[in-house]
Length: 434
Image (cartoon, rainbow, N blue to C red):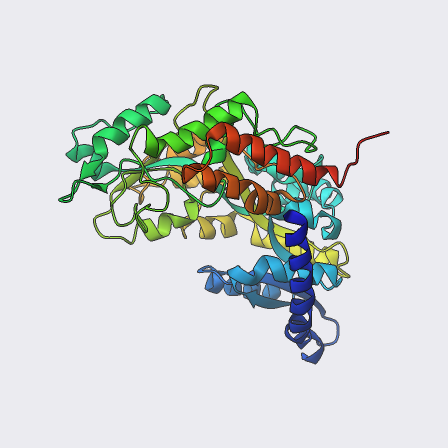
């Protein structure tokens, strides 16, 4: 199945390469740099931060008149495929937006930043990054990403719904049992007898929630060396079962396929497990939505297991101007720049910025319990660093999880089938010794 997918992806990439050629060929048609100036290219996802980025580049060019930055804006839905295609064609830009979720498969094309990081550590404040962030910047002990912002799995909840139900708000010592009890009290039936408000959402279609439960039950997706999938372990199956039984046993989440659209924003679900910090700005623009965050509820093996993922900047291994690209990356991630990004609804990856936000005078926007988000750092874990992780999860594992939610498979069957199919695929890369 996955091999067929890779074949389709290859031909899609070839077709896209032709199209991308016209897009990227614009570089050769652009005017040459002025005498004495070096041109570097920056490949960026179109985001609400566009105006901020453009202002940052203008400020950078004023400080470095010898460098010209040319930005290439790409829709988010096309970014990864185009980036892979450019990498395959040896046409990567000097600087590109990256993250630890993509790092493993982009590793052959990404410059090892370790010598630059060590040389300039004091200048750009390496120690100012939280230790969990510094670990996420690395793979096998080498630095590849200079981070700008991050996502962190948290427990999100609607404060108004808790108050209306006469429930105390979630605390830092919550467990799965507390989540279930509160979720049941918050689930309300409508006129047709079916719940019109659910106690807790359930994220379907990707690993964002179910992997939390697998890890908190003591399981994991892969062995430490990444050579075997272990979703068939008793611990992993315990996590998958809780994910399923949120709807089938505890009835705090909607049945498969019936999750209310934008349920948290529309106040049809009271809690989210996981979530995205880059939705904070949107949440705060919804009239009447009073929300907050807390540590993830602990599972049988503890609280650790929610995702901690970074996003930032990497430099192409083939860049002809790595020093200039590195200068831009440092500028885009200096404390003042990170503070500006935080104002757009992100958690700070630097201690100094986090401290300034936490101790700013006056009340800050939701979440009120911002301290819980920074405390959750210690319980966060990156996704497995595996070159084929995204394709494996979406193309092999997720279909089995979806069948489990639909009642076609038990958690044991889903875990066994997923592990067997993934291991058969991994064996094609690492045939057994004879």
